Amino acid sequence: MMTLRRFRTLADSYGADLQRWPESLRRQARDLLDSSAEAQAVMSRARELDAALAAATDARDARLWSGGSSDAALHRLRQNVSTRTRRPRPGGEATLAGNDARAVSRHRPRHVGWVGFATAAGLAVVAGLTLGILYSPTAQQPDLTALLQPAPLQLLTD
Amino acid sequence: MDLEGETNGPDSRTDDACDAELLARSASGDRRAFDRIVARYGPVALRLAARIAPDRHSAEDIAQEAMVRIWHRAADFDAHRARFTTWLYRIVVNLCIDVRRRPRPVPLPEDFDAADPAAGAHETLEHDERRAALASAMDDLTDGQRAALTLVYDEGLSGAEAAAALGVSTKAVERLLARARAHLRRRLLADGDGAESST
Image (cartoon, rainbow over the protein chains, first blue to last red):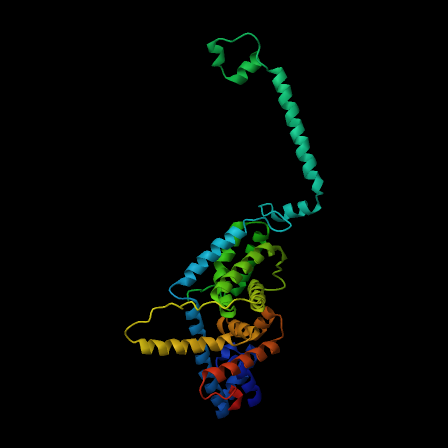
């Protein structure tokens, strides 16, 4: 059986709506409420304060959000969050690769990226020079019909 | 205010599983999954921040920062240890407390240049004064008291759930609630004498 003192303490915190009270204590509170005039008086005063509290909360909300400004605030929130989350995450790439990409980037030495880039650039230069030497135009000028042929075919038949 | 978002309803277990899945996909860089998180919980973050933060602009900044932090730390979320909403509440409340600690200029009220209606000006003034007094009573609460009140009374959390979100014990939440209510009773009710327990 719940004591009136305990009942008052809980009403002081959770107010008159028993749904807010700890679930394990609600039945005992209801029993006391049914049998005790003092408990009913405590609840009556708690209900009065609940109403004042709800009015105070509404007043504060009305001061903050007037004329549909909450809709505009939500729109700004979605836009700004979308913009900010497009930037890469600190310490990892914000890509579809996600965790795997981050795991790789954490274990990959920084200089590996530069070495790869330099190697690729060098290979591209060598390939360009080779193609230029092999397929440079000859002194003999083709006629107009030859010029209109598809270039790969012409290269293969030369 | 139209900031209805997800609440702790009967389908909360399904929601929890869905949240965990969306968070996991967000952690892998799935922006669509994160857009769904923002759509579901942006209103909750904004509503909670607005109830605790000193003004609307701070509340918007806090809600935005909370969602960005969730994106950056999505991989840290462990669904076995906590519900997503508890994590969200905790981030928002901590950001609100951080903002309150910073010195800031005193802003003009939102309606500082509102026109005075010619008809019923006296009644409007009384109504506005009453609303201002009510709102001011809420402003006077400490951050912890306002956070506890918001989580339990507005968001529908139990004392234990609010305690988890605030990082304190359930007893501590009950003390915060009791002090907040005692303060509001003194401020809001003419015949108030401290607390319900005085009867």
